[in-house]
Amino acid sequence: EVQLVESGGGLVQAGGSLRLSCAASGLSFEYYSIGWFRQVPGKEREGVSCISSSDGNTWYSDSVKGRFTISSDNGKNTVSLQMNNPKLEDTAVYYCAAFPESCGSPTITPEYWGQGTQVTVSK
Image (tube, rainbow, N blue to C red; front, side, top):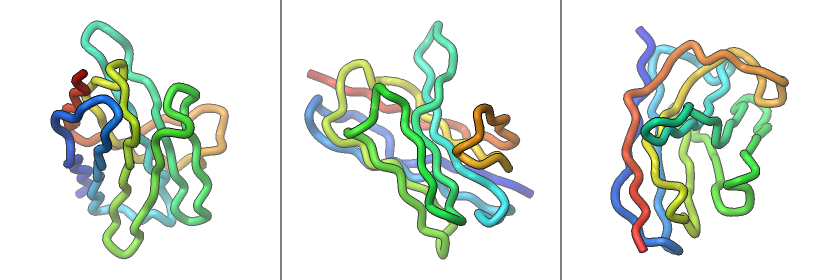
């Protein structure tokens, strides 16, 4: 059984910091990359960041590049997203997902999703 569980969401002031975690079970980071996505009500889900833990390859969307950092703890099967200097437009439900493609692939198709965690950025 594969499970992905997000945690760490909450209320944060603009310019502060927040750290999200995605705990994975039932899969190996040797065969799956982990990506972070976010969704605003009425909008499509968008990719935020990605990491291929086997080689450390990472990807960031232009909107978060330089502010967010993704990392993995392979021993704990956990991927984190460090959110520095969050902005109001970063408010969304954040999801993690697992997929067999490398983060460097032109397209990816998530096979497993977490339940999501709410991030709200205030002034």
